[in-house]
Length: 481
Image (cartoon, rainbow, N blue to C red; front, side):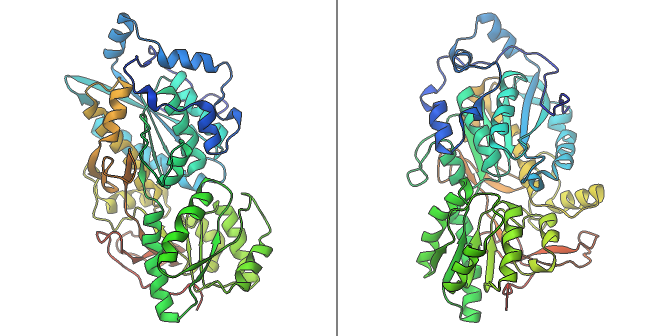
């Protein structure tokens, strides 16, 4: 059950002895609190929870279990998974399908009837915590899940503002953590790694999503097709905020574009929440930018784009990241959204099936639309796959209460599920699994025999350069002719 107090915080309903790890854990891979916070710009409060000191955390993480505690831990019949996502705040759209996703996960046999690992069968509980789209809050609820709820694993989703502080807390507390919907470079930097030399292993963390290579592999083929058609100048505008995603794009995307002959005009490292983009827009216009890429918070892009149209900045093709992923964002822009392109990491047209139930991506989406009366969203696929991967890790761990063993198994998961095939042991960095997006454009909706409802706007797959499994069902058009 989801269990919260009157402040919305996760609270414990059952007590179990701490599953602290012994001296055989790969402690050399743990990060210092100061280094982790510094790496992604969080304040000292990010990992602070009232009544929990650094000394106390060290004792919890490093002491050996007594024989009695080991026996009690081995005999525990319940596995606990904490799920941290931004239910409220600027990133809330990412979590709008969570209720549906969790209902489907909990109905799957592994969760409803129990998960068998070896000779033991375990009940599985999921506790949900809201990051409120705030990094400090995300770290706090992660600590609460580990220290108060005694979870065996945390899964987390939706942008570095949530995933990175959760991952950092789990690494420190030696609790397996799986993240998604965060560019792997942003996640890796958040833990203290160098994406240019991605050899460092974070023992308790794994992620599945994609990175700059895949963003470029999705956006640049569309740029090239529009450039060939319109003879547009190979100059592009970059709207990159001074945050984890923005800085990752600023460092990682332009080199791929440069190889295709495109020149960057950087709008500057602005602060999240900026409301006036006039000077940035004038800079783009003066430089003759014909293409556009970004990675802002959704409300910030809506503000920027409305101002851009008012000030007659109309690039031939706009390809956006982190925004216009969901119908609610699209509706907020109305007709201004026509033919803006973005990435889609999950669609109902993909020929993928749940590893838990065998349900197809198409039926999964139809079920959501029938139950919620709203258009499907791509985050529902990745959120569901968090719980598929969790099952894989528990089943291959040998002992699902042994956090070090579960974390090791997590790094070696290789399976196919609702997001397609994911191989954590073959990614660009240790513990990274890559899923492959397609390019979509938003246009006014139409009645669909496949999904049974007409939506104000809908995405059309216009490029599948990276994922031929997903069929094209729309023509790539210039954003502004």
